[in-house]
Length: 134
Image 1 (cartoon, rainbow, N blue to C red):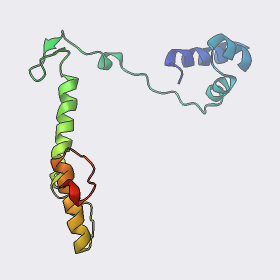
Image 2: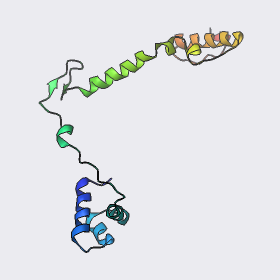
Image 3: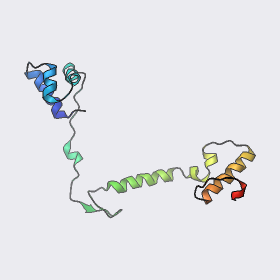
Image 4: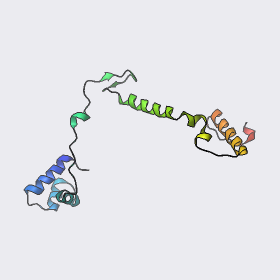
């Protein structure tokens, strides 16, 4: 993506000079295809970004949530809050995963599934090797 001021310079050179696409491309450091796209109108002029919206206002303050010196609102706390909200959104998946994902197991397979699930929960995810591990 080229910057808006380079695109404006290409438009100016196309309008005000007799330079060819190659010369304009060499002067501005873009490809001939980009110059041609700007000339033919295939490359639409994008609205310029508002610089004041990107710059945070005010001095850094201590965040009441994380304690960091940040420009408010604190981005870290916002991200942490969003992630915590996602975890709480699906509590059923953690408590009863077999039902939640729609596993339709025969009784003997369901018993084995629950046995292995219980083992993994109580043994920090270690693989279940068989009845000897219990």
